[in-house]
Image 1 (spheres, rainbow, N blue to C red):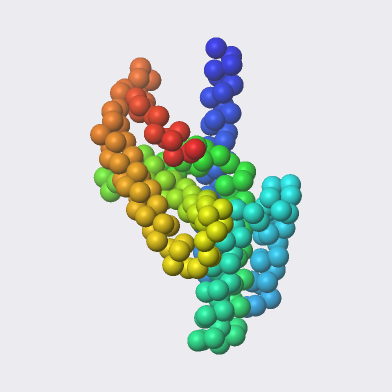
Image 2 (tube, helix red, strand yellow):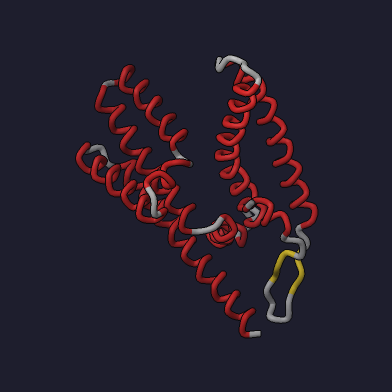
Length: 223
């Protein structure tokens, strides 16, 4: 009984921390979108990656999972600088690189299961007024977020397979199998969401709370 209570308290603490982390992330994003001064954006672009290194404990580990995203941000900023002026591109790069690193800090400090529970807590007020299903929306959102690193893994697997077969590293040779894999993954996600919607049967406990009888898919989203 004491072990069960300890696990419940630990999960509650993790969920509370994840809620706070998501709120801070949302607040940081709001603040950064309102700031245009280069010096303040530069300070954020230095401080947040430093916090990521501290959170992960290693520079290499901290940026391994977000290097592709940062590359996309850099390319987008370069195009913006060419078309709209150098300072606008620099602002875009500083702003979004800080946000990407902040999001990585959140996913480093808390597990996907804790983040999923936190999203449910944040969406619960909207469920009470009948706007949405908090658990289904959270499940869909976590699947979509997990879809991004999965695509990076797919690209790495395709590149490795092509290298073993001696094929060239052209964009077309990568795009065709990647598009097929994306479609397959998207179909799996759609089936998972439909399955979750069909099996989300609620039951009332003695204390008046409700819970999901079949939560197996939430662990699937976290894996």
